[in-house]
Image 1 (cartoon, one colour):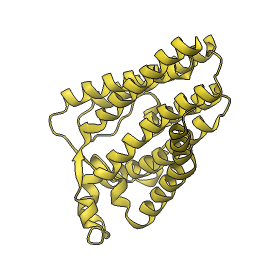
Image 2 (tube, one colour):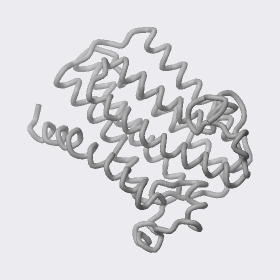
Image 3 (cartoon, rainbow, N blue to C red):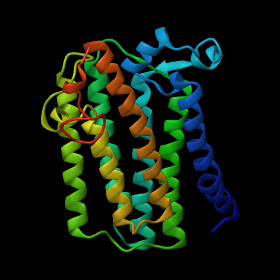
Length: 260
């Protein structure tokens, strides 16, 4: 393994992930606006008490439709990993599963961008973190295969993963069928405001499970769980405020439960 790849691996695992999690925690406590996007960002541009302090950073916003860049990047990188696995290791690993996931999200996001007339925004830091995450995930899988090649995935693992992706796709289609910024209500959304985030967490949990809880999948799972939990909490608060939902009628932000 080239020294440069070793250095990059250790920087990602032992430097960037700890710094990333610490940065999100600090932002959550000190500058929560940096973690908002879409409808929740619009709400906080008017109400945050931290805007004056972080105004320079906060004003650096990009279109939310740029989410599609994450999936272009991930699709290309995971496709490279799949081809590399086939040529040099003759195996079908979780890289193939991640290619399916990335390409599905690419198609969904492209459809959503075409359908949406009015684009919303996210902070530039949020966008850069997304690029960082999808590059890191695919690089870690490549590095792991080179150092310790994994056996091919099993049929039942493929079936479980396809089921979770199909389940999330159904929930995303329901979101896209709604009038903008209304509360979803079908499927698991009748128990959770952010059921699609819950399924995303299950997808990364399945990858971690299929890969025998390797460090290269545990770290992305922790990151996904932490960040989507924050996003789900923000979304719930936005729904409660906008639609004046009484406590007895509130759902869980993330878990598909009947009540808070």
